[in-house]
Length: 170
Image (tube, rainbow, N blue to C red; front, side):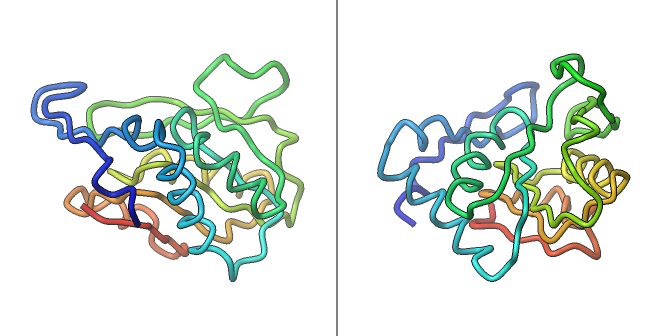
């Protein structure tokens, strides 16, 4: 995984006390970006997937090319008031506050196998909220994948019972 040294750590962002893992230094390098997407694809090569649900905004960076690579549809999970049709929503806790996510009500058909993708697992709130919306619509969450996991924040505990896979752990 040649991309690991390209992940920059920014202290005290967005608030004091947070060590932010910045992937912009990784994705600006074409070869490293390709390696990161390929690493995620390898994690889930054994999982049949109908759709990838990726969380705005950095999850999209990896979710869209992963959907293409796996031959799956793509679901944009967005911040509030960004989607034009009827939506479902959830509120979730962040490492440094709360927020809300939405997705279209027609994004998932009952029984569809959905893989949730985001760039980073911290507290698990965004992934847990996304899982809840998918299941409310009748989808089956077949896995949850992250490029990076911040183990000390114990986000994996929010996702007990799900197949959680990460490329690397800090």
